[in-house]
Image (cartoon, rainbow, N blue to C red):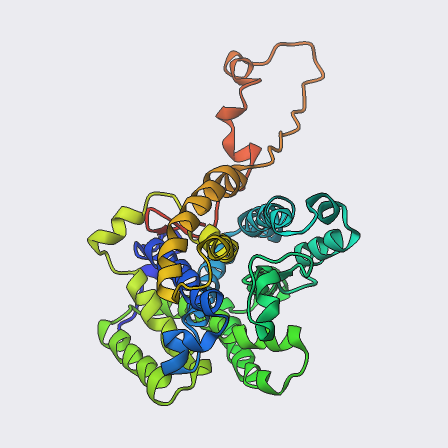
Length: 401
């Protein structure tokens, strides 16, 4: 593997033009995968479940966590302190998450309850909402609403307002763990060595997830390898150039793992290299999506509730493919609204910290050039704020700090 000396230059931004398109594909994959469950009531009807032992949506979640591990590590590496890092992460994930839950609980779900007003003011509704928003419940399940009639064996499905939120709290934990490495005493050591050591330890620990009975810890250990694989790829790409031959070998190993050995839990280890390699490809189609618009988070958040609504109106006779075709377009529209009205404004928000100016004690006027600049904070950007709008994503294919 060739050494990547250029990327070790602290001032160099690395170029990954394919990340935006890849996130859109991953988000759409989650919607398509869940369409089979919502249409039929059973995951066994989903093609990837049939042939690999796991639904496409889980593989897409693996991909999202690999990208998160890679990009959040880069964000932490380039953040001057923990305060700025945490603010950037908060602005990226929580406003969209909060608004999605508000809309699902108080604007969407009442239409599918027997008494909308009683539902809204119900103590149980508020408790369920707060549990999800505070990451105490994995998903938004409201047992006093029904989107449609379904098989009694899967009656829970008709009351699940949003079934994809379970991953968000694990992503938040991932942010915290990466931040601890970079903004604790561990930073005095070699960052890359610490990241590699802790990542390998975490991956070894994650193999015990099948023996863990607690839902929360088992779920975290289930997704931990994907996050850590992304962290390791961030370290790897700083020291070595990505090679096509290794990406092809990894894809071949992934196919064997999925469809021959049928061990989907090993997939993240073979997915990470091809995902980052594909993200580095300067394909023509990738440039079309490098437009500072990231709908992937909105597609992920709103895909489930939109599909539930489509299923309620379309009836029970649709296949998973048909429901996916009907659900993806409105999901993209809602995701666009989320991006332009909630996510992007949150990312652009900055708390302006005005510098304290010590005025001279003497009554003499300051020099003319200083007097002219007083009251014009735009001339002092470095003093006003050392934060930068960042979603830890790609701006024109360049990793944002």
